[in-house]
Amino acid sequence: MERLTFTYPAREAVARRVHVGVVGSGDLEVLLEPSADSDAHVAVTTSVDGFGTVWKHVLDRFFSRFEGAAAIEINDFGATPGVVLLASSRRRRRCAREQHARG
Amino acid sequence: MSSTPEGERFLARRSFIELNARERARALLDPGTFRELAGPFDRLKSPWLPLQGVVAQADDGVVIARGSIDGESAVVASIEGAYQGGSVGEVSGAKLAGALELALRDCERGRAVRPVLLLETGGVRLQEANLGLAAIAEVHAAIVALRRHVPVVAVVAGMVGCFGGMSLAAALCSHLIVTRQARLGMNGPEVIEQEAGLAELDAADRALIWALMGGEQRQATGFADVLVEDDSDAIAAQVRRAFAAPAPAPRSEQVEGLIARLAGIDGERPPEPAALRALWGRGT
Image (cartoon, rainbow over all chains, first blue to last red; front, top):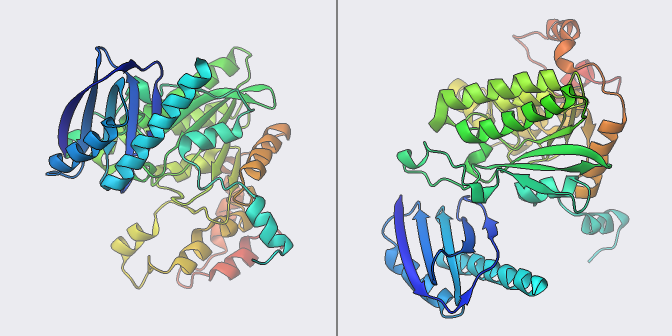
């Protein structure tokens, strides 16, 4: 088991909490909520050690399209990078949809 | 694509098995009434799994939801089978027992609460051993106390099934709903094969496993009340029916009948599944 943290600059506030996924085989859970400061923070706990570089690549790509100041917790049970990106996109869409519905 | 009536019915159904624990709870409550207690953002995680190198889930694999069923106050406790086999640990067990105990307190004060358990579990979480077992004992005690006030309804939908101490919880409930995909048993097939050997049970023989402990067999031999299709609306309708009808005498109080059943079995020559159905079936 390995814990990794990442910080990314953000441009807009996040108003909602979003939860998706399950810590199941080949899957992961994502909790997204407003960040305490103006940056985005990601805390990954993963069952598979030694993939810090791959996590960084996947999150770099995600944050090239997402600029919310979110605190994101990822609890991973061996999800592949593709699954991680899909789950991230899902929570981003849900976050945007709910903000749109509120606004 | 064929358009037989069975085919069209299959395509029209909304699978319950494919839903996660949270979606299952939502599917059973009246629309718009789902409200989660002790949810993932409360981060009531297992303190024991990370110490053993296992990633913990933010809700410890149990969803507790309040809402209503047919307009009556209800609580649904739904186990996530995809997380650690739906196993019951210290925290997830406390959430299950706590939900039932709070419902009991409400019932004792004259406020009826309809309790529903969605059981998808291999039983106790071995990494948390005695703490999980203690919690399961609390769940058992709460079901027995609660069913004096209100029917306690359980659903085993699949695909994990319901085993170990939680199979006893299912047996204690007033009303048990199963699908064909469900399995119900004290020991799971892998445990039986490991402990008693391949000659006793081949855990890889899926047809045999379901013939022995599948939902259809369990309902036909009286261990479950209703066999239902894997369809969210059908399962929700059966849950509503269970609360609308007066609950039958709990299975766990029909001791003499169960002892008589066992007396009819020759342990040296255990019956095949079909023979057991003829022997223990409901006049079918």
